[in-house]
Length: 265
Image (cartoon, rainbow, N blue to C red; front, side):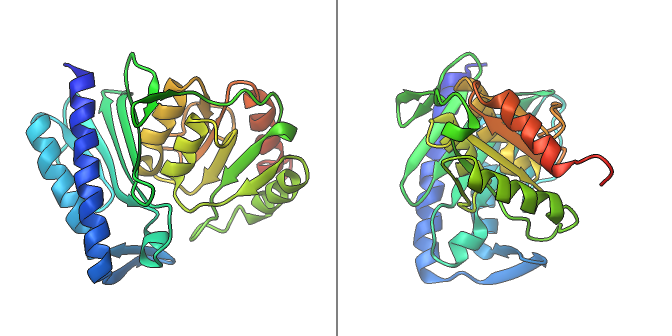
């Protein structure tokens, strides 16, 4: 398989779909609620349908893990992991960032990832064996050596509040012991920003595979590191992720583990 050619086809797909999302958003954002603070618009569904149809043409044997459930097909080897609009709450309020996130999984390995930030029209992408890119320019994670030298990002839980005590401890700590903490509202963009060095680290819980698959792959290809809150590798389907540059990785994951999972809690 020519992953480079496939990746560039996916890039074009995300740009066309991003244009559709922007144009439709100017007309109407009919909103449905999937759960507490968990929204979907007819545009999410329309965008996902377009993406699934085109990806099916590009790789007919592949299945899908798609947020809006447009396709239930399961591929024996290949499966696309898709979020048609990551940052839907931002989108329905007319805010950026919101993005399209598409990754290709070959058995257990992600081999291609594209994140297209619709507002700024920035496209982050990579494929197995290649560096990570932003609109044709190679990118890499930052060289900040410590958490104290870092700008960090996180996401606020919108339905799972059982871990709020630990999460609030983490906010308190990083506000006091880093360059600052940001919450943009799109995990895919947060991860892309780690990959290109705008953020040194990102962490969040309550996520799904389609939120993180492409972005985490970009971080990896850009020289960074990913793990779950315990330092393991169950970040794709485990509902929690830490992503950083290579230099702060050990310090950041140990701090997250201590703050989010203190002994006896």
